[in-house]
Length: 295
Image (cartoon, rainbow, N blue to C red):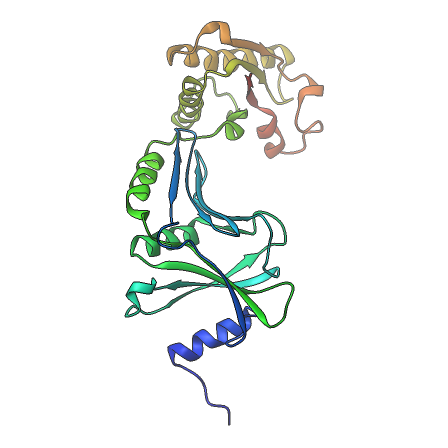
């Protein structure tokens, strides 16, 4: 009968084998030595990054764009790893061998850059381990040899100050990025004429971004309705709704010269759903669109 392995050593060994890493054999390690470990922060209200150069390999980057979630990217000049599943562990630094190794699970390794792209939860876990003074380490078989493993470690040396700068940056990020608001749609309920709280919040996020980005020079505001009802009434509804947004943007400090506002009623060629068959179809057509133009 095969005995179930429950020790930490056995579990780590099983994970190593699953990631194609051999317990014995040649290991190619990429790691910034004590005197090479430098963390670089880049900060703005649009994006924050925290990066370390890994000698002989490439760069490890924690990246947070406004309006998005945190991610971790590993970019390489030349990829030594076989595409597939790599084991991510948290290793003690050389001067703290008394600390245990932690298994952080498997991560995907791609064949092109970025070699590794992790979600927010895994990225936060890596930051927490670095803050503890640990070394997040990726282990994967080399693509060029079945008997060689590649280990990529991220050094915690000099991490603390850089992490504080990065954390301050993320607290000052805008609520949205340009890609999220470049083309926005405000949907309306049937018969609705005035902005509600959700609409004002949507417009406030747009205003906050535009005030921070001087490259934005115009709003194109276009009002549309569904095809039900009288076409003349629909034209008036689209005007009322488009100018409700127009006036709200003015009240929030947007220059009127930046606003180009039009309305089209229920003109068929401008409907999202040409042949309305349901209330859901009409809901999609009852809208005001906002397009931002940027230099």
